[in-house]
Structure formats: C-alpha cells, structure tokens
Image 1 (cartoon, helix red, strand yellow):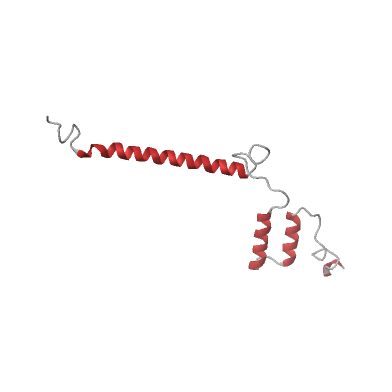
Image 2 (cartoon, rainbow, N blue to C red):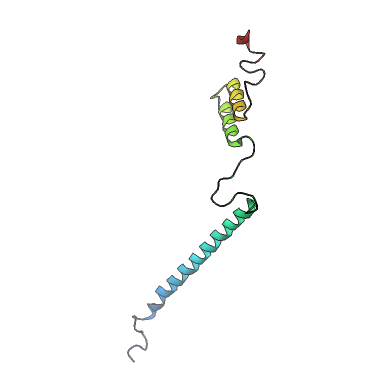
Length: 113
C-alpha cells in the first residue's frame, strides 16, 4: 500500500520522461519523412533515373553559363568594366572566336588603321 498514491518513481511526474521521449521520437519520424519527400520531389523534378540528374551529381547546364553572363552584366551596370570589355568577355564566355564586330580589333576600331 505504500505505492498507492505516489508510485515507485516519486509521484505523478513519472509520465514526463516517457512523454518527452515519445514526442522526440515522433518529431524524428516526421523530419525523416519530410527529408525523404523533399529528396523524392527534387529527384522527380530533375528527371529522375530516366536520364536526368541523379542525387549527388551537379546539374549540367546547356549552352552558355547564364550565371557568368549575369555577373558580367552586373559589372557593366556598376561601371566596373567598359562596354568594349563587356563585349569581349561575353564573346569569350559564349565561345565565339575573335572580338565581336565593331569591338576592339574589328572593322570600326580606330587603332586598326
């Protein structure tokens, strides 16, 4: 009869530790399911195993690098580079050979004469 009101663990607080443990377990399950769902959605959006990018592989870009072109345009807008240098670097990014027409070294270049 000594355990009638207080139980072997010192009263009504004996439910706290199992309750917290259960909540942490449920939270862990939810986090794992959310991570799996997100990875699955990313894999489906990338084309999945049928030829698209797979997990762990970097996305492959088609054509010129748009990020590099955007950064180059921002440098031009800030005044860090001149228009001629912008055109020259843009042509190099796009893999074009030689300076663009009207640029340095082109038919309209005054130093070409």
